[in-house]
Length: 378
Image 1 (cartoon, rainbow, N blue to C red):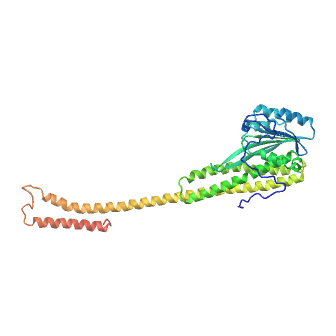
Image 2: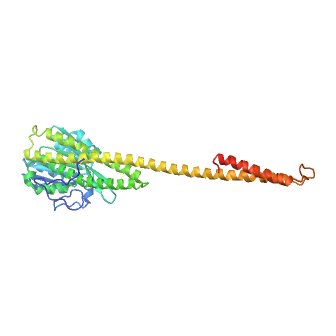
Image 3: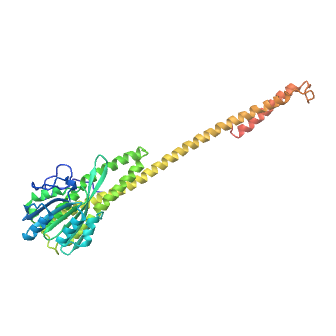
């Protein structure tokens, strides 16, 4: 499995994002909406001509009007968890297919790409690694790509489309290539965002390997939880390869710009690397789980062995104690019989009674000792 390497520098790379990920925010200084950014369904909307922002409408209705009145322009609308009526209004304006709109309203879709006439519908799953919680957070993004518009609908904090918009506006030559260029930039941002997740998961797996061989009792639960995250991450990344192959298959049919084709192929290379790493993580976790089960079984066997040995040693001691108790019981029994104070007892007035009793005690004790010795009780 190839080692993860930093994404190589590509032509026309955008400036690195700074600051924590946050909902895309409007660049319009005239905005008077005092609600928190995360509560605004309309995050940003702009009209572009030749890769340059020419207008920043304050509402969707104004955006639609400017787009109709100014031929040769492109609208880029960013929505964050919009209400159903807002999305239906956009669907009516841009003639979006009802199935795609339904997916965007319901959310919780798997990554996919579908074409409805001149409109391309793409679903992406972005991922963010949370260092403090040591877990992966997923966001969902829906894109409607039309001839003269881009409509993005986000159902999570990631990806940070404000950074994508800034990068595109700083490179008008790329932005003027149209809505497909925006799709490339979003795909590039999502795939690049997987790199910290890969690094975080690799670190978690390394820690788990150490805990497994240190016999940490809680490691099984952590392996299970991490396996679920890797599976979820695989569900987000694996379909990306199908999306990018579908885009590549349509290069000639839809006359995609050649320079943009190179960028999309580069994104596909990175997505393939990510998919391979995630697949490797899943195999590693399966192997770690097997090793952990083997080590737990070995530990249990060792514990059973120790318990068996302790039980065997205890039985040996009990046999010795029982043997000596039987040997000592014989003279006690004889002495008890001859110690009874009855007037009429055999050998009670016999002159050799005492020597006979002593010899009898010794004989019984010696006989019992010999028997126990032969049976390895002593």
